[in-house]
Length: 316
Image (cartoon, rainbow, N blue to C red):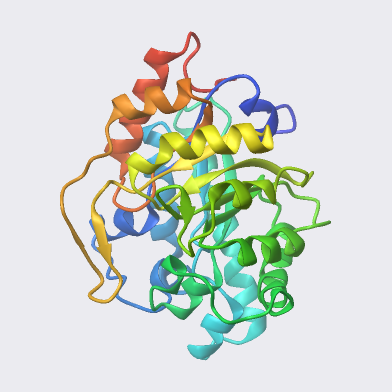
């Protein structure tokens, strides 16, 4: 949120659709940055933070109202392997929120008048491993161990005052339980978003069970899916809405297939603006893109929602 008079994200979701941004990594790569690194986009927080701000700004210009920070793969453990001490790692996590805030400031200075929000990304444990584990889950860790991993990062990100915490690309219900515990009492609302295959989490649990975990969680303002195939979204929307009664968040990949071993994409995009209209009709209120969805895709989402709703995406 960029002023004391702007609505909260939760309030905005009650009045109309809200457009999320797209993939951070593909936007950075399109700008010429090499992300072949275990820290992925988080490396640029330490080396070229201005690139992160510019990536956020590109999405705001395209029509996004929510910027998801570059902290998905930013963890104390991951930074420590690179020789970055705990205190500096905390500074970089805070910087991820500050970079998005700066992009919002610049967007408003350019004449963008709609409210802009910052979502602090908290990726799964598997993202830190950088071996594709976030697409499998079931790491062999206890619930308590997963909570201990997530809580310190969540505390630092919450202290940086984002508008919402994005618990995203969650592959299984064990990690979801740990994340819900880790963000409890931090004073910042959150959304919970699973990565799925069909009607199950990546670890194979039914989505009905996965979404039910958040049904009574007061801190959770939206539930849904991301980093999945566009074709998997409609059923997930129906289940999330029915089971939780909360607004639904969806931001799938482009539809291409990711090979976590070779770190390459294959196939053709299947994500279309027409799908966005259907998703909103079926109950999705927070809509964007994940991997391989760039500013042109977000602009298409914004146009589609403008045509589909009387007032278009949320505005002042």
